[in-house]
Amino acid sequence: MLDSTNVIVHLQDGTIVDENEYFKTLPPQTLFILSPPDQPVAVGYEVLYNMLCSVHKDYLNVGKMAADFMSQDLKAKIRDVSSAIESQSSQERSKLSKKEEDPLWFEGLDTIASTKEDFMFRRSQERIRGYLYKTQDDIKKSSLYLQDSKARTKLDTSLSNFKVWLKKVNHFGCYFSRKFYKNDGYLNCYCDESGQFECQGKWNEDNCSHLNNLSAVGNSKHLINPYESKEARIVFSTWNLDHRIERSRRIGPALLEAAKLAVRKNEDINSLYFFTLLFTSQNLKLVHIVCHDKGEHHGADCSTKRLTTNKNVKNEFSSIFNIQKAVTVI
Image 1 (tube, rainbow, N blue to C red):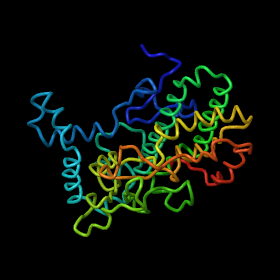
Image 2 (cartoon, rainbow, N blue to C red):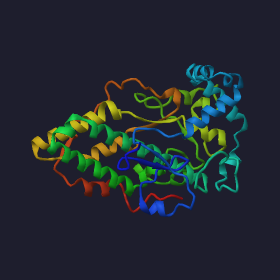
Image 3 (cartoon, rainbow, N blue to C red):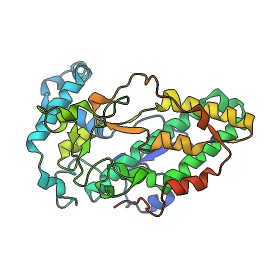
Image 4 (cartoon, one colour):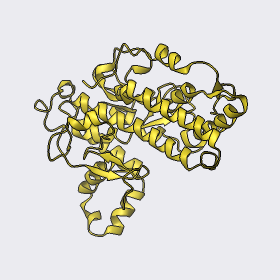
């Protein structure tokens, strides 16, 4: 049975409902999915799985064979799907935005989004919210948080700052929405005006080597425009926002160390520094599945000189993230 005080409310398309104002805008008979913070809900990847299985119907006969199919050489299978995308993608279709203009793009989606940009905006928000909830869960399970009241107070302040700041930038929904291509700094999108995304390469590389492969085309060249087609949208869900300085191996432990240091020095955790590492493009690289290195990122560490501060980070946040350019759903 779910604990009502510790539950995440999702819509069917994966959008998280965490504000009363947003809840009030939802139509009657809206279906909600309830889950603990650490339990994922079915979103884009499961749709990709179903599409792959429909292409390879022989694997549907036996459950074990289907599992084996998905566990063996998944990257090659995604490349096969990508090739199909390249043959049917159209620049003209990518220019369409509204649901009534390109209903095929929205096929299979149970979403309140009325435009492609709105849907992609919400997908980006979902990923950023995921980083927040995972970090919060890791912190609150730590022995330091459970046993040291002073450190717990410091950590709670930082977590509270994260939530307030994320709401101010609308959880960086701008990252996947092409409407924000003209924005500067942290409130920009990762794509160009048409909606095309380029892989930024492995965490320890300046650029993606596949972008210079003259024999490759489309997604095999680590380019993709999810605005072009339903299939491109599904494959884009396998692309990752990869923390160069890792969230679980580096940022989380450094945040705990910062709490201890802040108590000892009678300072505050440098919440803005950790916010930047967890949620902004300064530390998040958009990468194709082939360039997503899940191994330990040796050499990419938090700066020990920036763990704590005695400055007013709230004022600093407002100056860095120009809130006059409010990030809103379009």
